[in-house]
Length: 569
Ligand SMILES: O=P(O)(O)OC[C@H]1O[C@H](O)[C@H](O)[C@@H](O)[C@@H]1O
Image (cartoon, rainbow, N blue to C red; front, side, top):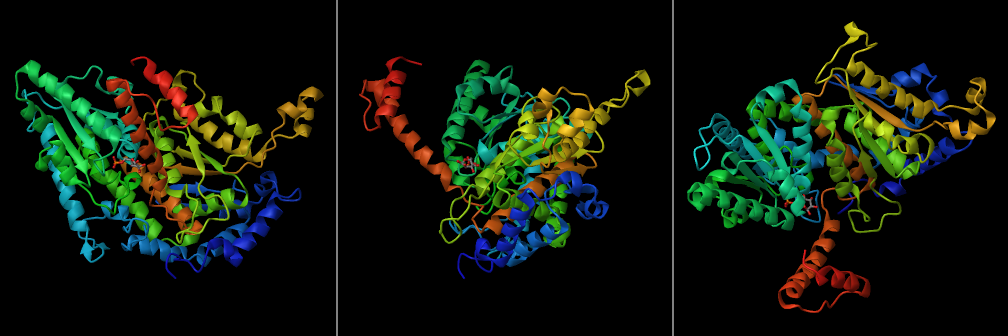
């Protein structure tokens, strides 16, 4: 039936009803506590899954083996496997925009065949990749130099949302990786996203325009913020051209390139067609890290070899997602647990806790991937959902979060967490020879293991009594525990593993959307604000230029606007 790729809405299936009953049991006073569930060795052994050395332990989720089976039954009831295959085989599953969803093709190896409609897209993908590698190589070697002959050692990538967050996450992740750092020696990569002019100051501070290459990244090449920032930075380049006595157009030709699915739009902006690197409408903005959007800035900074490792990592996780049985499939399990926690146990927030400073921007990227994908209110056929889809995502690198928001997660609201850690550090420091009890990474990871157990086990008033804590403090010092978490242990975070992590979380969101029966690949919810901003912009222009009265807004906005235009900024 059109618009319903499963066997009917998930919430009308017997599997959904069975999970609702299961949730009522688990959440009741008589339901099991994680403290007890964690005593069960067989259960702990069974609630682990592994792929390529990545261990996912979900024994600290409020599930029994029976719950897991019921979640897998739900996956079956909504034809999850069929929906995954439909995505991977280029079906136009983004029905409101009539598009395929093929970010998987961006990391497919040469020679693989992936059809979108009746076109095999892999050759086009590799043609663009080869152009990027070639261009990046020429910049890195100095063959493509700036207008005054200087080597282009600095890159500013201008873009917002999906044209910014993913590339920045990967850049931060590779910055301190050994191979990444070696490949990036002598180079810098910065991002300019916000339309706030303060971000322009931060991005340009201390940069020499003569040695700076600007990459304008925008799928549509119409995004207001990116276009204004691109114009602002092109003026900065033109000023520099004037001072250096070189031609303005020469400066733009040598120092400005674009990444876009709208190649004519980029050319109209004034960027030479040879310097425009394309991608396709079947790549959603938030899923575009492995297109030219991410590959261009990353190849400039880290070179081809590192980027290829990253893409190969993402591809290996894609392969696992498409082929592993659902009960051992990491993205599927993560997605099903997300559905369980939010739709059945009622936890609408989740927290991403990377025990790695290099994953500093991972939560911000996944915030967009997940919240823009699954923050929807209707099913594919337009009927209103009888539950809230989507989850609120937030997070910070750890152990920093332990000293700020973790209080709430231990003793306030229940917020399921994903703990992400690695066996090896990107920067091992070992002063055990100088009296430190453990290496610095072991110290970090002590917290990774301890926090998850603290959340699961808690601490009872009986424990406090035994410790001799004064009775009046017992309620304050009690930890209820029974707070669900998943721990994912990676061997390390190098380029390949970062690619795997990216793909893992992209597919997690897709799985949840497939189960909920929504379109995870459109984002109409961002449009209204853009339209209203246009009206305000027109008002500001006429008020500033002609002293026009503020009109056409509600009284609240009118009074704020009047105050705003009363003085120049
Ligand atoms: O890449 P662009 O076309 O400039 O779009 C940048 C971003 O803005 C839009 O408003 C959407 O919310 C995002 O999904 C998109 O990634």
